[in-house]
Image (cartoon, rainbow, N blue to C red; front, side):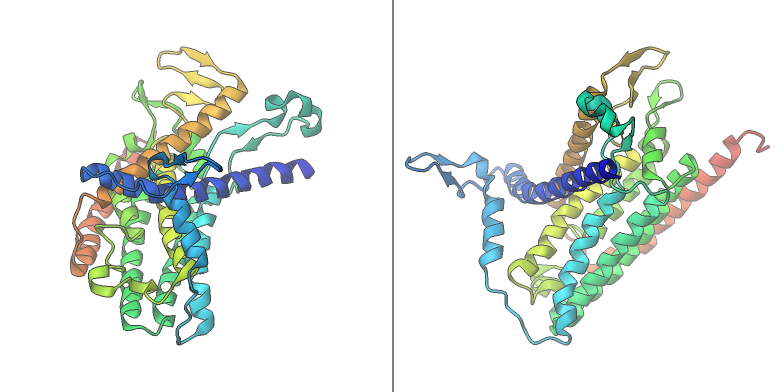
Amino acid sequence: MTQDLLVHAVFIAYAVLMLVTFGTVLTWVERKQAAVMSDRIGANRAYIRIPYTQIKLVWLGLFHGIADGIKMLVKEDFKPRTYDTYAYAVAPWVVFTPVLLVFGVVPFGGLLDPGRLFPTLADWFGGRTYPMQIAKLDAGLLIVFAFSGLTIIGSMLAGWASANKFSLLGGLRAGSQMISYELVMGLTVLGLILIFGTVDLDAMVRQQSGVTLGFLPAWGVIYQPFAALLFLTAAIAENKRIPFDLPEAESELIAGYYTEYSAMKMGLFMFAEFIEIAIVGALFTTLFLGGYNLPYMNDQGFSWPGGGTWALSHGAVVVTQVVVFLVKVLLLCSFQILIRWTLPRFRYDQVLAFAWKFLLPLALANLTLTAVLVWLLQPGSR
């Protein structure tokens, strides 16, 4: 139907705009936050001059991201001799595209009723409602892991096709590291699947809008605090960020698997990394922090412990949910950048040992304990 196509086109445009904005702004946040942590000024040279005046808009260096994008677009697109020209050209897109597709199943708001939001269009929409999610799939969490696994292929493809020993070594490192930590991520979310009984991300968020133990918000982090810590650690490693950036390791491998890339091809690799920071924040928010809702909030307003309610208009609920989701994601992005500028880089053997000898046993132990507790708390289990 025309109405459905319009609403989903708006959702897709919003998602792409949001992710591209996050990818651009986070380049500035990383510089500025690193400067604050190091007691420096940070990026403050790029500016836009108001025409016919001497007024320069610096805005705390916010225009550095725009300058970086222009630089990437106008740089020479160097094309080295490769093992496979097609594989070399397609590898950046195999890394970049799945990062965007992952967000397609992430709910960024509750139930949208366009007729209530815009009363003049009520007759046209005919009472249709839409979950604020591009693709509402029952297997949402499985889609996340399916798409995120494709980036492993892109990284290894880029390293092999570049015909460069440093790139090849970086691709091998990326593949083994990402596969190792993807397994840990999968095991950590299995506990949530046992508790919520679904892999539908929107259904998980709706179950987190209630309370547990009478007063605590029923967020995933309350049910699975240890799994939340394991998931965030594995997700940072999956994104190949310090202290897990061994696939790049500029002091050893120049730039790792994208050493032979320049111009916008290299820009796609770097842009995908920053967008993935936002994706990690969005997934952690959805799985462990109640998604788009504040504590005790649902699509009608707030339901306080003890039975009290605070009803909100549909428009207020929609705006609040979208803003809350963005704020949670931004805070988690800032936390990941904090980690990046705090901890030193591991050695490569330490990275893999940390995954297989430390995180994996802990994830298995957490899953086993969760399964036992879920079974014991089921009615009639004994």
